[in-house]
Image (cartoon, rainbow, N blue to C red; front, side, top):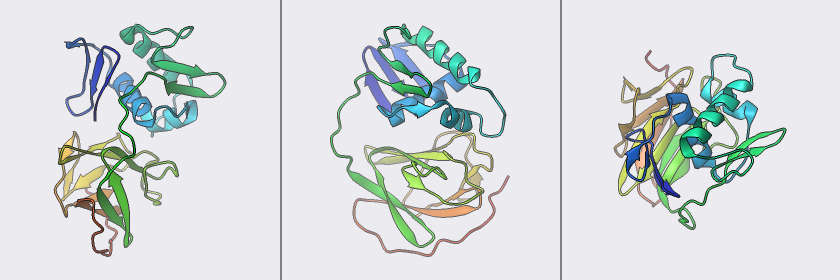
Length: 215
């Protein structure tokens, strides 16, 4: 995912945040939080949802999220009193409030097949996970709420794992960084197997099998 806002550029593939072309240094958890907020903008995300996404296997109280928000605000030159980028939703959580480039209706660019059912993927980031609000809901207890993201842009597709509990595997190889996807490749989230398809047309439905991912 690449997106520009105000004088900043965010690139999840190169894991860079640039201000007027100069790198801005933030920690990996703060970077992950910024990506989540941008992907879901302008939706407000609860502190609980953010905690479960950023620290899926570790107990961290709400101050953990607040600390990351403070880190981002300092890096972006933002403030809680007059937010330009990150808005506090009192008693609930946070949302990304900066203006993002308008893309209009998201165009279908691919799909994944899970349990014999085809689910569409669109240009830009597509979050896969057990969360009912995920772009692609994968209803399996071995899948994290926000397990991975498939990003389609300019005729390319990449998948990233969100530090999920049971990992993401593509064609037998564990995903530890952004990995390109090809048409027909097998993607395994936890024990759930999906098949990735490129293109805007409806592809034939195939039966998805379940297998345990390699550690």
